[in-house]
Every structure is written in structure tokens, then in C-alpha cells.
Amino acid sequence: MASSVSSAALVFSVKRCDPEFLRPAKTTPREVKQLSDIDDQEGLRFQVPVIMFYPGNPIMKGKDPVQVIREALSKALVYYYPFAGRLIEGENRKLMVDCTGEGVLFIEADADTTLDDLGDAIQPMCPCFEELLYDVPGSGEILGSPLILIQVTRLRCGGFVLALRLNHTMTDAPGLIQFLNAVSDMAKGLSAPSIPPIWQRELLNARNSPLITRMHYEYEEVNNTNKTLMAMDENNLVHRSFFFGPKEIRALRNQLPSSLGPCSTFEVLVACIWKCRTIAFAVDPDEVVRFSCLINIRGKRGFDLPPGYYGNAFVYPASITKAGMLCTYPLEYAIRLLKKAKAEMSKEYVKSVADLMVIKGRPSFTQPGNYIVSDVTRVGFGDVDFGWGKAVYGGVARALSIISFCMRFKNRKGEEGNVIPICLPPLVMERFEHEVKRMTNKVKPNRPITSML
Image 1: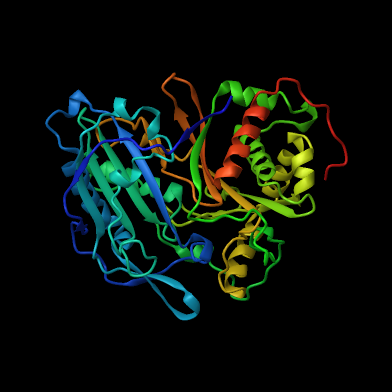
Image 2: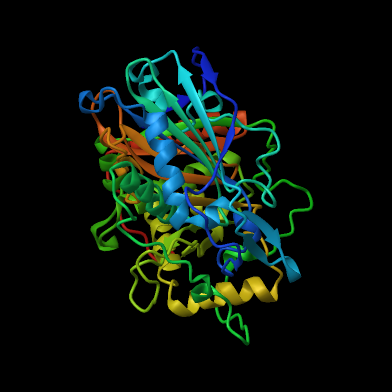
């Protein structure tokens, strides 16, 4: 069955130095730079927590990871100097970076624990995250605050943890990894990043005469006056991660007919999660629910983003259906909906999203009845190497209320698989876990169904 890990507390202590502002190693341009209209949407005005765990390495004996990363980060900020600035708003709430050179927030720390002690707790929903990334009071605002907060914590075993919090309007996961790889380059003695950073946010701006040309269910206004459609109390949520190994993925694939054609592991997993989550909420069968899947446009045919572009470069077209159909039809139905939504992605679709932001005042994504999952399995969180080798785990540290992330993970048994963190109300989480176990224990494939879409 898909195994879950709850956020039970681990007991260890962390000694932290006072937070410091880490500035670029050299003088950088003092200017104001606009974000793109894909960056600048209400739904991205939040902080993303990331964590990476590194084992000790005898080759690096005598080297201090805190000092190495501190110096490399300062050098990398010379090239990525907008990260050392602060966000401001212009006319019509347009976001801009005031490149002040004030720096990012940096924290040095030591923990009296080891990677072995932490075990599988290093996966998302890491119960010790607050110890490994101190929430500096007043640092989490979107406007006027540091754009990155980083804590490097030495472990008793010789390893270390790098945890950070990032203002999502500035960049997405691939853009962050590009920046961290630049820090890695500096740590290894390079004089400049191996991939030069490219700003050029105007490439993803709205057209001079904006026009919404596509249907965007992901931004649809939903009347939820009774607050009954998958209602979530932010102060009463259970945080849990679900690990899907080869056995669970095989059990899900066995339920699919050959007529469906090739399906990615991500499609299979999120279809299962979406269906189980909807069942767990006991949504009225006639209510419309939706699922938004992030699609990165880097390297896609027809797009002109240069290598080195580090702004947000994704859209998330939504699948919609009545809850009753999603809950009662076989898994195939949900996958076909996902594939249909993903097929909507095109250059025109992206332009239509940018135009929508300008025309409709930069709305947030739909929240009632919606669920969003980002696939970061191929982004490369675990591949960033500051000299100690690759991370034993690297990825987003936790889910948000309606946003989850799919990441690669190897558990203590040595099983390679995918881990998906999720937040739900307590009773809903109980039903959700039951549904996931039920679906991943099925062995007989369902017969094809017709007239689903």
C-alpha cells in the first residue's frame, strides 16, 4: 500500500546564529526591473519552502559547509542581483524588483542530530522543518522583504541541511535550481555561472492589445458562498506525505485499459490522488471540481525562452468534471481529463494567460473545489552539489492547502518512488488515506468505459 508519514515531532536541538543580510560580493546595478505577466499573478504571491539534506564526505574534511555556501552565495548574487533586491508595486499592482543590493537573509546553525536519526522524516512535511529554517519575524511579506531566506545547518554526522524560503513571484523550480547550481559553480571555484542568467521577463508579458482567446477554468470565479465546496480551515489541517513505490504504481496501472495508450507515472499518480481526495471530501455529486497540472514551457517547441531564463515559465490548465463522475468512474476517466487539459497548452494559451492577468487584474487561481499538483521529479533538487556530493533528498518541504508537489524519494528500505505531500482536515485525511490504500491494493484491471468525455 502507499505508505504515509505524519508530522509527528522529532526531538533535537538547533543552535542558530543571528540572521544576517548576505549581499552580493561586488557592486551590482541599481535599477528597477519589471516581472513578467506570468510572474505577476495573485496565485504566486506566496513563499515556497525548499529543503536539501547532504551527507558528510571525507573528501571535504576540514571544509565548513556554512562558510563555503555563504561565500559562494554572495558571489552568485553578483550575477543574480535581482534576488538581492526587494519587490515593490507600480501602477495597477504591477510587481517590480527594486535592485537595492540589500541582500538575502542567511542563517548559520548547528543541530545535535544525524541523517540516520532523521530517517524517512526528511521527506516532505519534515516535522523538524521549523528548526531547520527559522522564520525570521517580519521577513515573510511579499513586498519589501528579502526575496530568499536561507539556513545552513551542520549535522553531528558531518552532513548538513540547506533549507530556504523563496518568493514564488521571482522564479519557479527550474529557475531556483539554475540559481542554486550557480552557487554550486562558485563553491567549486568557477569565476562565473556555467549558465549565464537571463532576465528578459518581457518575453512572457501580455500583448500590446491583450485578448483572452482560450478558456481558462483555472481562473474561473466560483460562487462558494456556503463555503461547503472542499472547505479548508488553515488552522486545522493535517500534514502528511504519501510514498508510492513500484508496487503501488503497478497496482494503479493494472486498473487501466490498453486502449488508453501511454501514461506517465505522474498522470497515473495525480489521477489517483485527485479522485481519492474528492471522495474523501464527500463532495455533492453535482458540484464541479477541478484539477490544475503545472506545465513548464521551457524547451517546448514554438517558445522563444533562451537558456538561462529564470522567471516563472509555466501555466496550469485545469480539468473540470462533476464530482460524482470523478468518484464513480474508473481511474481511466480522470487520466483522460488530465490529458485533455494538458493538450490545451500552446504558445497562444500562454499569451492568453498573460493577457488575462492584465485584463482581469491579476487574479488568483480558482480555490473552491480546486486541487493543484506540480511535478518537480525532473527539476534536479537532489543533483545540486556544493562539493559534498548530491543530496540524499532535495525538494519542496511541504504542501500548501490546495497545492501539492510530486517528488522523487528513496525510502529507508531502498525503494525508489514518488512522494506527494498533502494537507487536509483531520477527518478528510482519514478517509483519503483509506481510499488511497484501497486503490493501490487493486489488482484486476477494469474494462474500458465509453462515452466518458
